[in-house]
Image 1 (cartoon, rainbow, N blue to C red):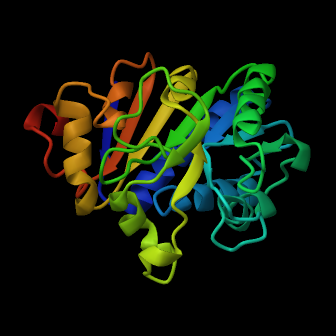
Image 2: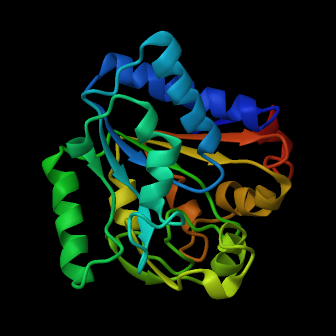
Length: 248
């Protein structure tokens, strides 16, 4: 485990983007696992900047997104499909056929999830996974109680997650979908490298529990602590509750 503490969100985002950039340069056909939400937005902005100013090519990159709300069409501005195109895919030279995002409108969710797992396997697995962490320790939409061997599946969102995400839905919990599709913890733990991002004082408690307390399915993010190649990038506020040995 490698913990990197940066001064602020901008520096944290640049550090994460720099790691991804170097990996793509070395392995142009890299398979990336991508997250959504406010935390990785700065990282995607930096990747777009590197593409436009330094010529970083995404032409051979393949991407798999972590999750999607059930019931939201890809044209819905609150869908993660829409988010990814707005924040990254519309601005780089990635091939549409190399982009994979769970479909929140499928009728047979279980079948769709199995097919998603098969697509990841057929791509040779995910080389690098970008993750954020929720205030309750969720990663993707793996809510507390998610098991270490769980796979891509339908999941009910907790009231905490619904409340946290209501800021994207006109600050109304009633507007937030109550279910989602998410890669499982087992799927995530099989990737080659993980970059976990967290920023802001509101994430400090989740970061502390992830790093300093025993691994437990009650804090899904803690299940990654024994991953063979885990880099955690924090801003100073998110690192605020960590003990000195992690801050030096």
